[in-house]
Length: 342
Image (cartoon, rainbow, N blue to C red; front, side, top):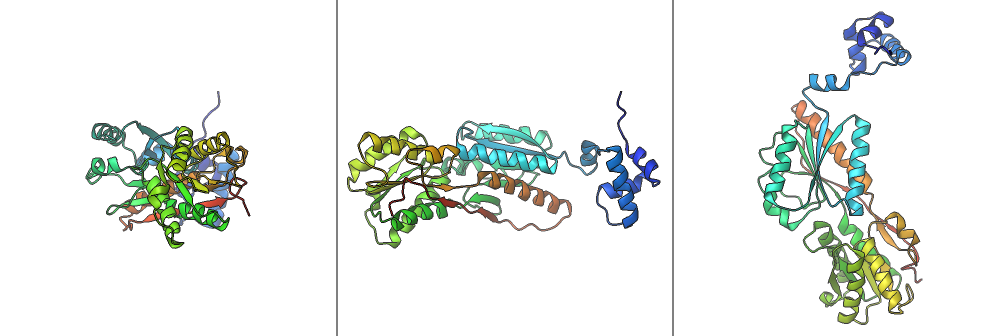
């Protein structure tokens, strides 16, 4: 039977007290360099691993985050959760994941009660910004005893938020199409209640307005993130405005649907119609033609949320002020054949 190495074993082998070993393990400054090096060498040689649970409880923590997510079938949402999991694991935290399947008060209250009853150290609200949630969330977090970090939503009061700069992404996509010589650029939006969809549309509107293009309502079709809505969306755009020469589809799945519709209609991409997506899913480079898109690093966004919740927890433990703010992840334009006319 393998005997577990204890802190007493380390102390005895290093010729120091258990308190000194504890100070070294917790990176306390009140240890001489020689003693610190000796203890660290013994820890390595004996293969000592501190009891993470005992350490966290002694500090009044469970080392657990509550994560509330939604829409794992969407590329962005699932990638965000991957980033949260990877960073949490790296920092020694466990996760309690709860998934919303509807935006209603009863389900939200039940999820929050469950997480708080399990004494999570903080909550990451990884639910897409949705107009239906504005009223449901009002006041629900004001009495919560643990820190909360929100993702991808409009700032409302003293909130700590991490977000992808979706509006910048919309501008990048539209600017690129204009630079390629396209002029009548339609848009297939995401669901109109989603903050991400609204921001991407705003970026498109701002860029189109700067070049003096008007009657923008003729160039807008609402989609629902699915490839089917992208295919239908292109048909509807052409019916409203037959002279369009480019489309900004607000995610890659809808861009795939638009590519399919163009092929069936005999429209050449990119010669007759430029198409740009959003997300840069792994398959985007293998569409035909390969898809120009906006790459959002959703894994980095998830990791940033974990960094922010850790900073909030540490500030609270030290009774320090923590300024509510928004931290942004910047998207990138990835140019491929579906828009490269010049």
